[in-house]
Image 1 (cartoon, rainbow, N blue to C red):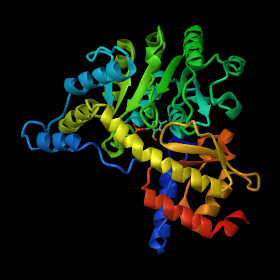
Image 2 (image 1 turned 45 degrees about the vertical axis):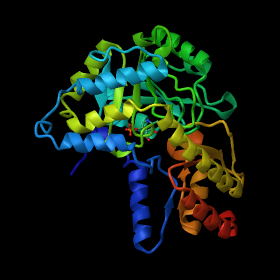
Image 3 (image 1 turned 90 degrees about the horizontal axis):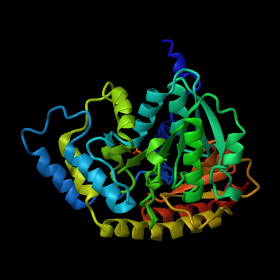
Length: 389
Ligand SMILES: Cc1ncc(COP(=O)(O)O)c(C=O)c1O
């Protein structure tokens, strides 16, 4: 069958392919340790599971739900934004629950991009921005994030580009994969830039609670709602990646525009799941402290693994990963990642999948137990000569 033009140039998602390869290696008797993916291995809070169980027992909760999400969940997102980010949102008009924030990226592209329109995407950055812009018929214009610039967007460089067809700009802090936090002065300049060029800023914010004491929302900047929307998610902050709960926050007009597309795509989320997500959002500081204590201990192991591989990295990273520069002996991060996979049965992510600016880097996820990291360190240690040759 001939596939649609919109999929040309869009391959299968890297992890989807790589997980198949890892599966096949495992079927051949290997026991690959996967340190690639940012899928939290810890469970959600017990109260969250209890809400799901109790609500699912009821008879009247199994039908289609409101396209705008349950009012209980919208209210919970608004309270969460007020409590942790200091941002006031109207739960009726400025909050749209999503089936994960990844789907929100597609909805936004489909809502705002015409064929040939452009979107500014970070390089390195989350690959879904690039693929979804392309699928929606748009064209990506990369803006490079450089280590020497603390991985902040360089507005002078961006302004020098042809911006005539730019409709969207994706921004993501804490940044994945580099782990850097937003410089708020740069974010303010971005808001002004977006107003000047009539660009919708899409701030993607799923990592603000991981190893970070100061969650920040772009919507907290004065005037931001005029030009910015924010995506958020329970996947990382509440260990609920498989539940698929995210949110889009922004001005009522933006929410209604995106809903025009989204309400034609899906028919809402299972109500007990939405109510359990609301329970998650009401958790106090203890929850975040507990989760972060686990990640902090694991991070030490990741540092040890990276030291063994001769990689260099900054210790002020936040989020679920450590981003590290590879030593000069390797052609690129793919070569190092493959050497580690095929010699030590440990999967780490080559930085190049996040864009060409990530070619000389790798990314290691904190989503594995201490024991798994220790086994990975032992395996790499035992195969170091082969990995280096
Ligand atoms: C930067 C970034 N944005 C969005 C997502 C998607 O998260 P969700 O599970 O909410 O779809 C991810 C997932 O890895 C991510 O790294």
